[in-house]
Amino acid sequence: MRTTKSYPVAPGQPVITRSHAVWREGMRFGAGSGQRTHAIDGNSDTAPSPVETLLSAIGTCSGSDLVDFLEKRRTPLTRLEVDVVATRRTEQPRRVMKLDITFTVEGPAIEREQAERAIRLSFENYCTVAAALAGDIELNSVLVLNGTRHEPVPHPMFSATFPEGQ
Picture 1: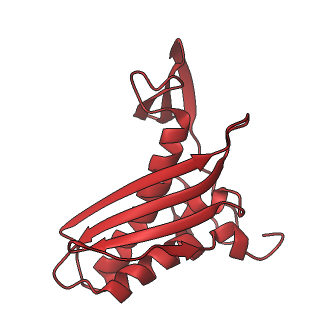
Picture 2: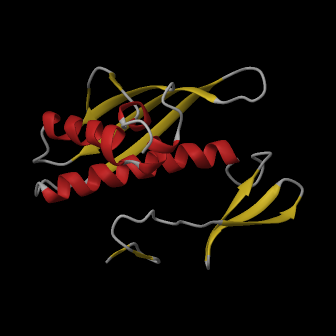
């Protein structure tokens, strides 16, 4: 049986992940799991909004994949920043239509091809947050490696490449 950080997982069984939100006042909530909570503010006054939290989630999910991939290749990072910009519909619901994600990566032994492959694999195979979003969202990544900005690369979202019914 494999395990996630907090839940045992039987082979072939779905992974159950939980979050709990508690309304504090106004549009402010505390959300998370157990003692690991953070503030979310529907008005974006005192904490990130729910949508900003979603953008942070996709940035840190794909960033974690990038770190993991490069560490396994023995090409560690010295710096990683992920900037996520969402274009949303003007009318309700103002769902995300397009994501532009810039990965600013530094590391003396990292090659462009490695970093681009790690980003591609994250969006097409590994990033749970990207997989949870609708497949019709346009996604482009930009790699800034050791100060050199490269051209945007379009990516199919995981949900667009995942077999039907799974």
